[in-house]
Length: 328
Image (cartoon, rainbow, N blue to C red; front, side):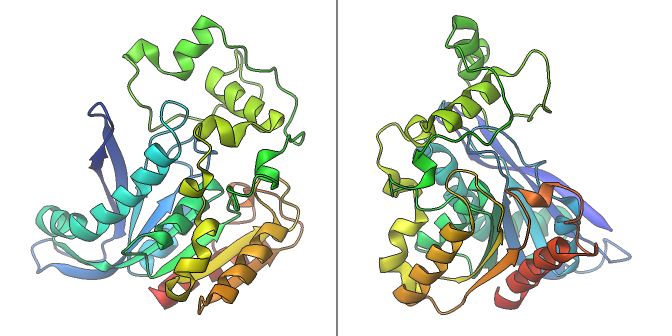
């Protein structure tokens, strides 16, 4: 049976608690028995352009599959732009979550739930910009052993890339207007400016539209998204691809899962193919691409991608999850 518990893994600049959900599969018949070894940990980072979303934005079928494959699944919330820059918020929080998984989680689970986990056996995965966060961990002194990056945002330090260009592919929506009311909502001033680490994504057509979502989509349309979330324009601080050359020989086993109809800024099959080629040229030993024909950006959020479903989407998803298990 699936078990879960919420923990605090870090704090924001003003003492905000950054929470993570921890999920595992407990097949024991009694909690009185000795600690049950599970072994591996996997971090999962949600999508949302580093501006919206939370840890509910992950497919349950993937979480359950990984839990049944001897993983403790850790799905953190992380601070959202623009209250904090991408580097100081989401990227720093991803590193903090990885450190917490290694150094703190094993003792917490053993003491509270009699579950034994090896904090050194860590994998990471994520969707869209969450996939970028997973790749970022490979640039750190203690990287994961394996990474699955689903339709990631890549080459952010290349200002000629699509991440820095205007985009007209989203459904029509009003432009964000920087009124006092909208700015108060965007920067959470009604709650004293508390740094947000969770924002529920409103469905299309929600009335009135959420200022934060309008702000995000306006930045994407105008080609100003990167500058808006990293105002100092030091994009190498949020671009794992900028570190391929020096980290390549020690890069963990990595699988990209990418739809060939993805045209969202910074994503797409050409970006993934470039990344795989650059990693291999830099000396990375194990790099693989699972291409999903006809699939758009974020296809795992739509029907047909659940583990065990028929078709290429589900097949590619399961291949990525099995890759994590094989290389952790």
